[in-house]
Length: 412
Image (cartoon, rainbow, N blue to C red):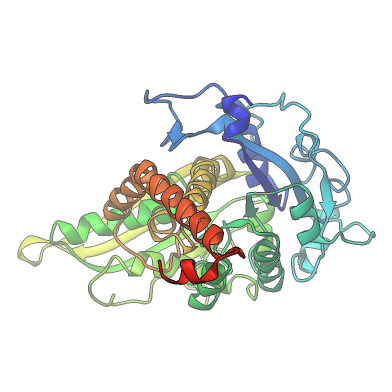
C-alpha cells in the first residue's frame, strides 16, 4: 500500500454547485503541495499525516438533470455553475453524481426566470437513491454538505444519513447541525465528529467584518452602528432572494459579528444580501445579474474614539465567492478525518470556531486558530492513546472468552 492510499480520505459531496466545483478543482490544483513551506492560497499543506492529494471524491448527490448521472469531474463545470475554472483539466474521478431526494432543497423561485437571464435549477424526474446505502457502498469517511440556503429538512436528512453510514459530517451551510446541542449529541453518541456550521470563507465578508469589529473593540473604539451588504450573481444569491429561505443565513452572519461586541449597538445590525427586509437604505435584494460568482461586500461602521471624537469606516471586499470557501473546506475535511482517527466525537469546537460562522462555541478568531493548531498538534499523542485503548480492549476481549478453568480467571 502506498502512502497516498494509506492516508486516503474518501469524501462524498452534497450539492455539485460552485463551491463543490472550486473544492474539486482545488484538490487537483494543489495536488503536489506538501511539507511546511508556504503555499499561496493554503493555510495548511499538511494536517497531521494528510496532504491535499489524500482527499478523494468517491460520490456526490444533486438533483439537477444537467449534473445527475455524470462523473463529478464533468458535473462541476455544468450549468448553472459559473465559478472560475482555475483547474479546468480535472481528471475523470470515477465518482458518480447520484439523484438525491429533493425535499426542500429547491425553491419555486429557483425553477423560474431562465428566460429573463436568471440562473435556475432543473430537477431531474427520476427516483432518488438510498443515500446512506451509497455512503456505505463507497466507504465514505467524510460527507460535505453544500445544500442551498434554506434547505432545513434536506440538511437534517443528510446529517442523519451520515450517522447511519458512519461518516463524519462537514456542514458548510446555515442549517444548524454542529451548533445544535441535540445534533451534536447525536453525533457524539454515534462516535462520529461533526464540524460546522455555515462556512466562514478565507477572506469573505463575515470574516473581514469580525476581524474589523474585534480590532476596534481591542483598540478601545466604541462601535455605535455597523452593517454589511453583499451582492453577487450566482445561484446562492438568486436563492436568497426568497426571504423565507434567508432566515438561517441572516442569523448566522449576525450572530458571528455581534458576538465580537461586549455591548449592544445603537442600531440593529444587518449583515446579508442587499438590504434588510424593511428596506432600509434601499440597497436592493443582493442579486446582481451578470456578476456571476464575483461577490462584492460593503462593510460600514460608525463609532467614537479617544475623547469622544467620532470615527467611521467603509470597507469593500471584492472576491470570487466559491474559491473563497474552498480554501476553508479543504482544511475542514482533513480536520474531520483527523478527529475520526483520534476518536473525537460530537462537535469539534476548535475547527468549527475557526472555519465556520456559527459554531457551537463562538470565540475570537485568534483564539480559535490557536486551539485549532493545538488540536492538529495533538495528533501523534492522541493516536498513541487510541492504539493503547484498542490494545486494552483486545486484552479484555480475550479474558472474556470462554475458558476451561473459570475459577482461576475469577481469582485474578
